[in-house]
Amino acid sequence: MKRTILFVDDEPNILMGLKRMLRPMRDKWEMIFANSGAEALKIMGAQKVDAVVSDMRMPGMDGPELLRRVMRDHPDTIRFALSGYSDQELVGQSIAPTHQYLTKPCDENQLVGALEQALGARDLVPNKTVLDKIARIEHLPVLPDVYNRITAELAKGDPSPKVIGDIVTGDVGMSANILKLVNSAYFGLPRHIATPQQAVIVLGVGVIRSVILSLHIFKSFENRARRNFSLPMLWGHCMRVAAMARNMAKQEKLGKDDADHAYIAALLHDVGKLLLDAYCPEECTRVYDTVRRENRRVADVETEQLGLTHAAVGAYLLGLWGLPAPVVEAVARHHETTPGRGVLDPAEVVHFANLLDHDIFIFHEQYAHVEPQSPRLDILGGSERYQAWKNHALVMGLKGEDE
Image (cartoon, rainbow, N blue to C red; front, top):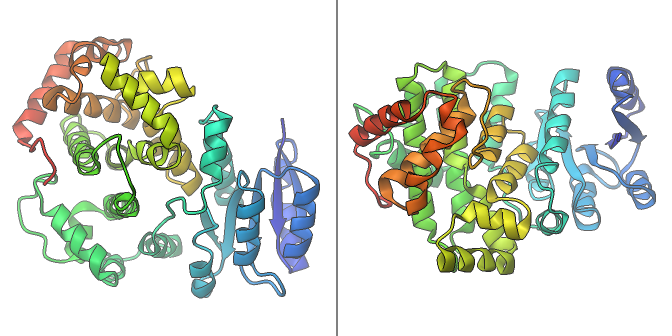
């Protein structure tokens, strides 16, 4: 079934260029082109649109206003903003209604890849009732400004650690939290990190961006009423799993990209729990009541009662945000027991790092006795390999509570 993509720009030459550039996608997409926000809304009132890609600067109804209207009236439509480097003020206005920002000029591979990944992320949530609830959230966590600015700098080329560090330093609160975190036991660095610039040099831009994202997401949920789980405990769990993923990647000599993807996915693997608890509270409460009453795993009960897991919901959000495909896949599959591709890729690292934390810190007794004997482990070497990872994790000496 073809997906319908609506492109909106007031410049005819831009729309014509998009038509030419995207001609190879005609077999997969139905593409519609509108020259104003008003025309776009009229089209969307007459037919279903899967994704809208809008310019920011347009006369009359500008991009931020159009995307706010789309969010209100067509919440299940994926929303992209096309912005130039000089559009920072408009980008700030459109943060709430926008899933992703694409920087002009945008080449075919970047645009197609971003749209395909976001459209695919929606398929991760088969329960349309839950998807509809999440899609209609007006205050869904959005990418923080610091993250977007770093992404924009990376799109220009390969900026120096000083440039990235200066961006982080501009947000005093975020800068302080990052330095506190990177100097904690979760990273186990041999020397004290005094500045964001040093943190970028030692850990890399990918890790720093993921730390910014994780801190932002948890911060956005900390003032919400919550009865199903402890936010500090969930934060500590995610940090330990990320630390174990880094340790496993180093132990297994994974390449830098795989190691970074594993760390990022591990750090963000449970964000779906936050979304379900905040925006589907009745369903979530029923799940956790059953978990406690019957001593069962959360993911199993979610599948039974909701037809999906928090893993799928988290992957959906990260996919909309355009995080790398290996990260989205690892988050989506972190509770699966079916074998993977037979290699230790980021998805396998995150799965077993998560099991190790449950095993070592005994969040749920069944993790240690059931899942490590799954077919997913057998294809990678069985219990001996798992025990080696566990021994290394124990050597790390992480604390079992939030620091």
